[in-house]
Image (cartoon, rainbow, N blue to C red; front, top):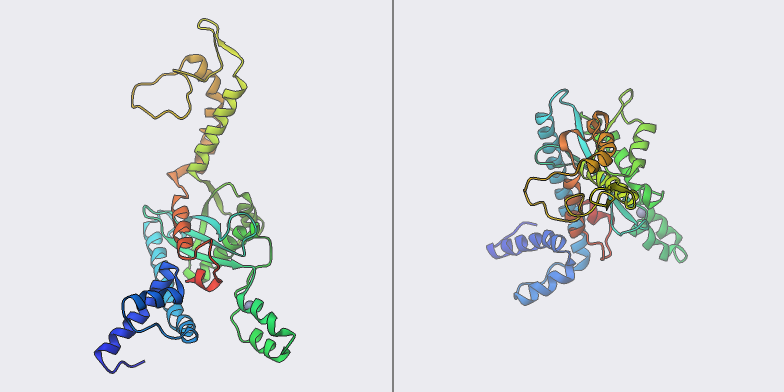
Length: 326
Ligand SMILES: [Zn+2]
């Protein structure tokens, strides 16, 4: 593509920008055709060319930037790391294209735990491949053509387990390639309640001789605390704890209340309430438990990455693994 005039140059730039734009806006070629029409611009390139340019020009470009960006994030994490610079603390999580456990595509991501967390690596897992599925329609009519298609495509399908196991598999893949890819090891892992991820990392250690330490997500820990307190309040509902004022349980005004805004005033709890909830604090705030939530680490950044990812590869729309990759 060598532009011969200024106009043509502009047109090509608009065309190329539109490729990226369609992905960002999630409207595809048909959407661009409408916008170009309204703006009195020449229509976008024909459908078949469009896909080819997408695959041969845009995708490699995005992949290159993606790699550079993640490589830079690794350097940053190594720079900010105390102790062994190549042993990083990461947070990981999985996300699915569709809710529930029937999703065809899933993505596992590992993020750095710096002041500004960044995506270090992602792994897409797909149970189906568009081309494989499409080729089935010619299988009966033309077996040779079917074989050609199957042998000459980059298969998107890379996972055949259950959708629920995608997170665990994806995280494992990311950990396994951290050394060949970036020369670092992820030795501390922040995860949510999905214990299968940690179980998998313990059963199949990605780094020989190195045990990965699990750090609990601080939000998860707070939830645990809330749950324990609520359970306790329920249990003590009918227990007379303050015979003087004839009050039962530990809930209510001036005691443990739920859902009220913190008002910055001085607070104190009656002694019997303190005594009643003490075991919960002793348990959850023990040195051993707190060691796991150290650094106040959380998975908030992962959640934010997920919503960004699926806004580009919308859950309600049909989409292929290639789009998720980009
Ligand atoms: Zn395939």
